[in-house]
Image 1 (cartoon, helix red, strand yellow):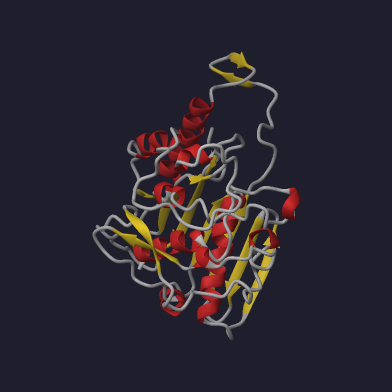
Image 2 (tube, rainbow, N blue to C red):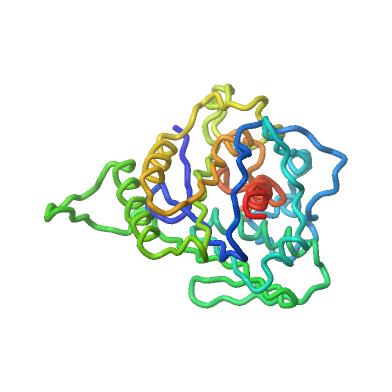
Amino acid sequence: MMSWEMGFLWVHLSFGFLLVFLHNGNALSDCDFFNGSWVLDQYSDPLYEPETCPFIQREFTCLKNGRPDRVYTQYKWQPRDCDLTRFDGKKFLKKYKGKSIMFVGDSLSRNQWQSLTCMLHSAVPNTKYNLTRVGDVSIFTFMDYEVKVMLDRNVGPTQPWDYMEEDKKIMKDMDRMVAFEKALTTWTNWVDTNIDPTKVQVFFQGISPSHYNGGDWNEDGVKSCVGQKTAAVGSTYPGGLPPAVAVVKNVLSKMKKPVKLLDITTLSLLRKDGHPSIYGVDGRTGMDCTHWCLAGVPDTWNQILYNLIL
């Protein structure tokens, strides 16, 4: 059975979101950036070199950890009906001078946060920066632009409760999809009550999938992502979407305030080659088919975000 994560709820499912403190009101693009396929692009310059970005934590530095192939860094996401504008870090920093972007989630949000800091730092390698941590919040500040890229990270046990109470009923456990929907509804109610969309744009980060069952990509008997060197061909995933995707779309559709779904599930499902596998923090004693190598798939998540907010 395939497992998945998103960032913020302490079960096998968690969710993450982003807060972009707006320079001004932005009209989001009408293009569907999430419907497309992966193509090899061996000629464009990379957005950053993972070997030289000083902010990537060891668990994501697959090349430094001994991964022998680099093809996974050369894939480009190509939407079906439009093109993605190439990420321009200087343009981003100039437009959002004095503003902030915050990732809220778990280690997958950290994956994306570190990707964006590398993408921006590569564009202005000589600019002054400051990296601080206050409690659970990490703050990366580009001093010359007064831009803050923040991460509010919450990690913990997969189930920290002993029991749950709802409508005065005590329950030992709850169906994960039911629990996920309730938690997500609590979050959407908070956004509807507290967020001013003229000042803050909210993005909900879609489900980031894991790859532990080769049957999902037509390789029966394969039990992990180790040795995967190529992306899946085409625009659909043989194993289908996780059930939580429907829950997310249903709950978000009922919101009063505008929230943009970064619907990265399908494009990430197609990248069975993009995980650290045995080239993560635990080396060959571990198997990470949940997080992503950097450079890699989270760079595309951020490039799509860039296209939506600029």
